[in-house]
Length: 279
Ligand code: G3H
Ligand code: ZN
Image (tube, rainbow, N blue to C red; front, top):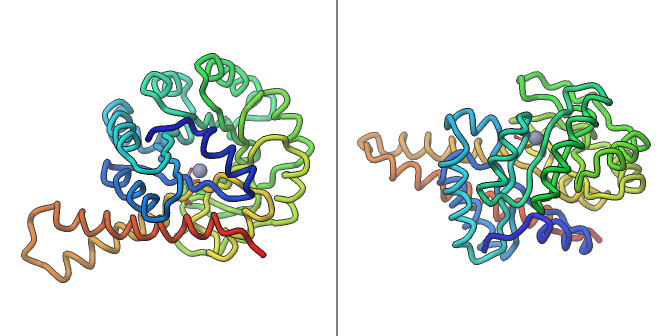
């Protein structure tokens, strides 16, 4: 069933588990992520980024399809708007039944980020929707991986108090869109942020993190773990392999189904990693 994001992240925090959040580009990604979560017996967050909205030209069609896939699921599924920079897009997501949004003003200076985010958070709370924001920009979306930005714990605490957000994306050594798993998560900083900040912490750019370190990052205090690029790698590899093995294929359902199955398997595996309670 479709649930509010808080119904997935809240229990994860209390259990010391990670909550997997995977990016949807096409309806097949939503289907694959839900199938993977059902196989894992775990709740999952489907997220649609502003970049994906740009690809489709609008949020409504892919947003409605994703909400319907969530409704039909046999595990709890939340739908989240990822990396929105436009307040208008946030309002549209509220109207479509999304359970949460990320408003990303991380490229602005501190005061600009606080002012813009606090206004969006007030609108979302009036609609009963949970809000994630970002402080300390996690880069990489431009293809340049210089994961040097860090979120300061004292500033993060002040930021959450000033904006009233429900979750905070932090810069702790990751970078977006890494195909190689070479990011080093600063686990001491994660622990310091966990101690200083009263809301769940979100890891962006998780595809660049070595898999064993995903479990460590959750144990150190991260809760929502955002994964996109890793699924794109699996999806595209499956299509390449299928087409190489079956050069006569013309029906896209053949190779897209292969990609959907590959993504589902990766989601099942990654959910086990972020939900493993370390000894
Ligand atoms: O918001 C989405 C993520 O931060 C995904 O990052 O593509 O590096 O896994 P990734
Ligand atoms: Zn991100």
